[in-house]
Amino acid sequence: MTPALIRGRTLSFNRAPQSIDDSAAYAYESDGALLIENGLIKAAGTYTAVKAAAPEGVEEIDHRPHLIVPGLIDTHLHFPQMQVLASYAANLLEWLNTYTFPEECRFVETAHAERIAGHFFDEMARHGTTTATAYCSVHKASADAFFAESLRRGTCMVAGKVMMDRNAPQGLLDTPETSYDETRAVIANWHGKGRNHVAITPRFAITSTPEQMEVARSLLSEFPHLHVQTHLSENRDEIAYTCELFPEAQDYTDVYARYDLLGRKSLFGHCIHLSEREADAMSESGSVAVFCPTSNLFLGSGLFPLRVLTRREKPVRVSVATDIGGGTSYSMLKTLDEAYKILQLQGERLNPFETFYMMTRGNAEALSLTDRIGTLEPGTDADLTVLNMAATPPMALRAEVVNSLADELFLLQTMGDDRAVAETYVGGRPAKSPLDAIQAD
Image (cartoon, rainbow, N blue to C red; front, side, top):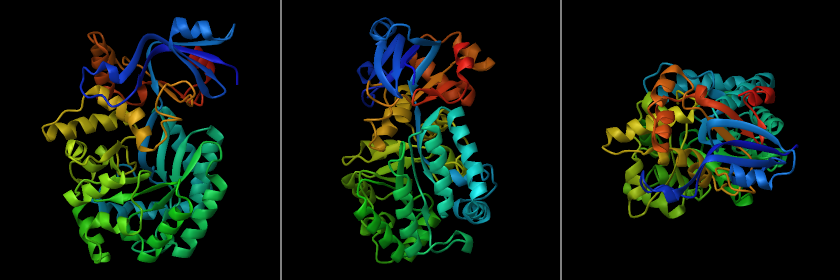
């Protein structure tokens, strides 16, 4: 791959910002550049310094005046639910049974899974998302299609074949034995191939028998370096039903704890209604609570208590995600716009530096992948998102009076969507537009 020098204003985080004035939390260059070689960031800093260190005659791509940030990261969404978005339902369980489960049955067909995989990766690139943590369907064919497309496009993805052996249509059920065998096969075929990461994925406790939960424990024991993903405490009816199914457990979180599924690489979608004991268990294990703003609002599940979880004596690790298709937008910008509103309803604020930290380094930390993604550090993978705060006429009008980086970030967060993404780079290669279109930008 020919070395390239990508020029623009650059922003990357060193740690979580403590306030809107915490400039030590990030590195910003008003005329910055990144030297990209073999899919990696080789150098980052001012344009003058990076240009001086670049090979003679290096190709330059100029994105000024746009802002270059690390590729956006989404820590929870459902690849088979692209055609479930905007489905009218009263709540989580009705939505699952009426729309989601019937749609996921279609992923037994390889051709359908492959077609949707193409659309999925197109949307990720269009919205500036370079890494996602995805649920496939129960069918091995869906995981194979997802990982094959990821390998073809060179993306860093975390995903897993869903495990479900009860309380779903027959076409969506496996068994403890087949879930073990097929998950092991997905791991053998795809984990570590390209930039793929396989996650152990019991959908949630309602759809897995104790025998299948034991299988999840066995898989994690065999492959302790893998991620785990599932759902927890999204909806009060879901919580009550789970506790009926596992009467020996103290609470919903204890179901997963009994099968040794809590841990630093375990991501639990939603976590809206955790008790103090459950939050302690999450904190002590280092597990991640995944905040899914648009989904929580759309399904009426509740307001995620972000500040309560992160400010408690035993803080809980948190990430943020779209949760397509309960979520209503592929855009991490729109997702954080809704997160801001959820905090406003709780008398709290989410400042724009926190927002961009969460979408980049924060989510990379949640995935334990900051050595590869989420920053603009030399040696990391060259996944980048280029943002244009004047992408639409209303944004351009507002941009005329923007006079600080904080204002720009808040404008992007509040009014931005896929149109604000001028380009997405995956491993240093443009993924949204042809290279000739970028050079003319």
